[in-house]
Every structure is written in structure tokens, then in C-alpha cells.
Length: 116
Length: 116
Image (cartoon, rainbow over all chains, first blue to last red; front, side):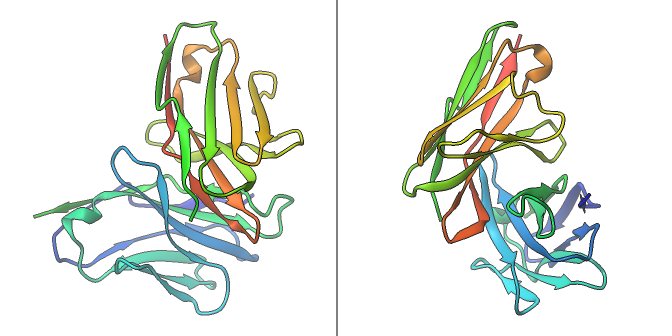
């Protein structure tokens, strides 16, 4: 069964510093990959997704993630974080070979804490 | 993306009572609705997938007689936790996917259930 690993439960970082949130998934079969962000007291919001094509995908607020099939990774990066980026970030994958291709498997989340 | 609401946002009930949670897609007709449960410090776990007008598909280990799902229309799905017990206390989150982009889910803000 597909699984998603987010090794870092918490990532503290100072404002304007770069950050990388790691995500690995268990299978190299055809997958869609997602990063969702959950701000305090809000629901999950889609940050970016990889479906096909270019392996580097970008969000409107400066985040980017690169699909690496050989390493089964989809790490999220931002070159310079802001205080407002403080949130919980979830990596998710859908397995296109499963009976329910719309089913999302989530990682346990990474809490990004940006300090001034 | 779609705007999804949930009601109530928070509910406290006595053990043995039933609780109904509503999930509404406010601006799109949802092809499919999903119900997740999130325990503290854990990832979202899919409970069931719901299509309008048909029976929900439950994930392994989820009791369909305990967690009743009614997807009455393309904009409304309800989850009823029957005879709730303290171990059912959790954060319940719904999401929707839209025709033409079923791979992407849009999440509601969640409902915090506390069973005393």
C-alpha cells in the first residue's frame, strides 16, 4: 500500500531564510503528488500539485516542489520564508494504480514555524 | 477552487448520542465528497468516499453502521456519528472533487468533535 513520509514534524526557521520540507512516498508507480497547507484554525488549502509534465511545480506564493521519481521524493522549498508562512504543511499522494485513484494518502505533516 | 463549508465547527456531546456533521460545496457541484478523520499529531485518514445518489464506499476498518454518510445532493453530504463514544473524539474533515479535475480535492475547515 502507498504511504507518505514526512520525516520532519517541526521545522523552525528565521524569516528570510530558505527552507525545505521533505516528503517521500513509498512507491514509484504512477502517482499524483500534492502539497497542502493548513493555517491556524483553517482548513487545508492546495499549495501545489504535480500531475504530469515538468517535474518542477510552483505556487503563487513562492513555494516550489520537484518530483524526483528515482528518489520517490517531492520536497517542498522556498528560498526566503515570511512570518505568514507559519503553518502545517501536508504532503499527499494519489496512487493511479489503485481501485480508487482519487484517494489521497497523507503524510503526518510538518509544522513550519517562522521566527522574526 | 471550490469553497467548502462544514457545520458545526465544533460540537461537544454526551456518550451515546448521535452527532450530524454537514459538508457543503458552496460554489460548485461536487462530483465526489470525501470524509477524513484526523487525530492529534497524526495525518488525515480517509474514512469514506461519497458519490451523490449512491452508497458511500468505506475504507477498511471504518464501521459503516457507526458512521452514516448521506450524499443527498451535489452540494451536500452529511456524516452522522451514531452512538458516539469518547474514542470517536476527533477532527472530522470533508473534501470535494469537481468534475473535470477529480484528482484535486478542496477541503472544508473541519469539525472538532468531543464526546464526553
